[in-house]
Amino acid sequence: MELLERLRTHRTLAQVPEPELQWLVAHGTIEHFVAGEYVARKGEPVGGMYIILKGRLSHFTNQGGAWRKVMDWRDGDVTGQLPYSRMAVAPGNTVIDEPVEALVVPRDLIAVLPVECPHVTAGLVHTMLDRVRVFKSSDLQIEKLASLGKLAAGLAHELNNPASASARSAQLLIAALAESEEASQALGAVGLTAPERAALDRVRTLCLDTPATSVRTPLERADREESIAAWLTSHRADESYAAALAETDVKLETLTQLAGTLAGEKLGAALRWVAAGCTVRGLARDIERASSRVHALVSAVKGFTYMDHASAPEPVDVGKGLTDTLAVLAAKARSKAAALTVNVAADLPRVKGFGGELNQVWANLIDNALDAVQDGGRVTVTAAHDGKSVVVRVADDGPGITPEVKDRIFDPFFTTKAVGKGTGLGLDIVRRLVDRHEGLIDVTSEPGKTEFRVTLPLT
Image (cartoon, rainbow, N blue to C red; front, side, top):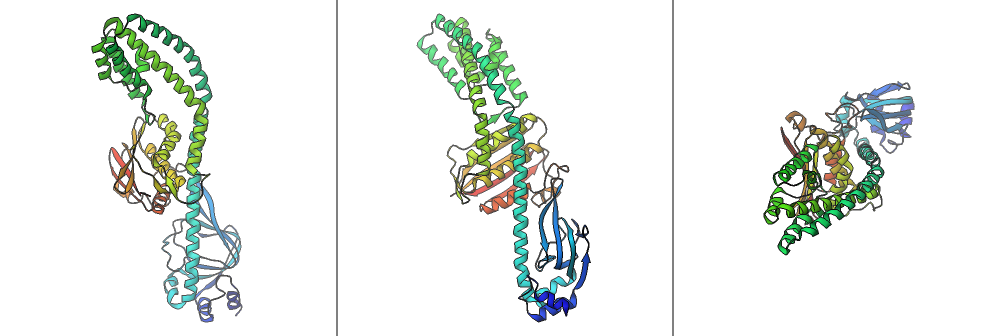
């Protein structure tokens, strides 16, 4: 009778009819747990439903190699295996904080609760939904913190360089300006005709069109410089111009066309003037980039989180989000000598959603792709307009995903990374965020090519 009275005043069960409380008393068992005792362990079946009468217990999950508290329960709560729950095994460890007294209904009786105790079941459905919301919210926050941690690491790496880069480029710019003045005088001395000046101007304009959405690997840069140096040598020009020309979009075909218009001393003076101009502009660009790097990276962080935006869906520029993500992850790409390229269609329309959440999607997918490729690998990101949707593709040339792993990559807490290297929540969070935007995500994989596709409906 004492137990029945305690259930009548139990916060969760107080409104339950007397016969159902009597059923719980008849089929449950009073159990006592001491502080530090495990009620459930990760990966093992939960023993039953726990109606907490006294005490407190907490649930911890292993995220990124560290155990973190997700939620706790105390007298008046009900936890464990609940009716209609699809939980097969415990997602983490449940530990007693303060000595607990609980009425435990065995696991094999949970299935008959909806029939025997419909009012209990109705109340516990709300309890289960609240628990699911807490777990999802916790997972999202933890993964966001993990993503921000990666972002902060990239940010710290980048902030270490701008000041010294700016000072070094300024010193080099002094000598480059002197060389540019001498090259201009030498060019003026050879007396170009109007058609020759027009041909030279076409080459010169390419110095202003270096793409900002491409990160060449060191091998690609070396090969390009070597091929330009060979071309210069074959045309009896100074091969020292190759370094400056290799950083531009000048193609060998364009240089060959210039050589068809200019020859001898004129060609040498023209190439010197172009290379000097490219050097000056390149150094000026480096100084501008270094001086604005801090602001750009802080803006990328703000754009990633959308911390100054209202928590309501709004038109989102997917291209800008991808560019912000590239700015943060470029350092990681360079550390692996990997090529990271982002191609955004010029007419890409906006999608309606939460910018910070979409940026988290791009960050997770690109970060995973960089983890997958070998040193010197390639990651390509494209965004295009496809009918009533925007489609973003993240492709890498890594070893691919095996069929066994592919079926589980979106499962929470599943990871193939070493302990401490991943939370196992990244792709689960990506899937949830894409679902929230009424989009679709799928993946195709084979050795040498893995591609994740995110399809988002237009505003």
